[in-house]
Figure 1 (cartoon, rainbow, N blue to C red):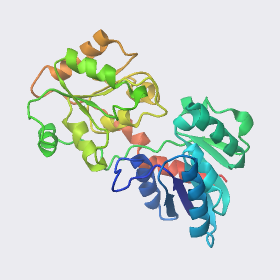
Figure 2 (figure 1 turned 90 degrees about the horizontal axis):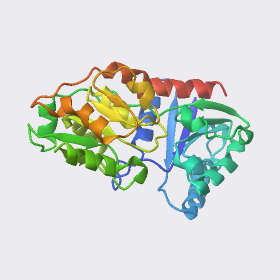
Figure 3 (figure 1 turned 120 degrees about the vertical axis):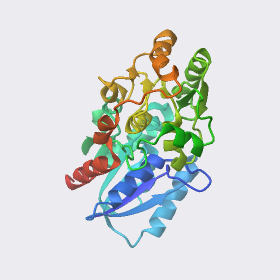
Length: 309
């Protein structure tokens, strides 16, 4: 089976963290013997970027015909139509359905898709069925459990130049994204006399080190389409506190040492106490909960969805 992935979220030397979750899924798909995967990635931007992408895609692939052309992000479904395929598909990631202008443009593209996927069930609930003429599916990108795995805390801290006995909390997102609520994490770190680490533009290969270096990971988001950071922490057996959005309620249910609750400073502060109260705070048993959402398992779900077309 030949498939082309079209996306405006893909790492570049200048922006190594951009769309690393899409790249991880592509790599997992390429590990499946029966698949041949090509990628057409272009830089995010305004309307002109999508027109240029459609032109370049049509030119570069005019002699190619694919079994499936699969776009990541709703607006990208439009230029993806420039590539010839037996079926076109799209995965919606969140902003494409939440932002008013992006939502309107995205919904207009969905009748032309044989498969419309979302990364989570809550996001699927925001999808009006009247505009979908093809199949639907839930297709998370998944957590790369080959990269996100337990590493001794001392080793991880040494690798990223952190103090061996420091009190570190990790905010695994860009502070500039308001829905991630960096303000909540910052206040909690101040309350607990811990240093708050943030990822922002951190190179993807260093992210697992920061997760393993942290006493705990904080995900106090207002909304999450999926919430990959929760699974990345679980895959590393690192305590994680999250608001009940995205995958968090399912992933954290009955996992000792974690918290899934609306943000409330006293409650979260109390949950952090055992993770900040010793020089060698305990890990959690979380990896088994993350495994069902690995990139390899999620790639198998993508393949099954393609086969159904």
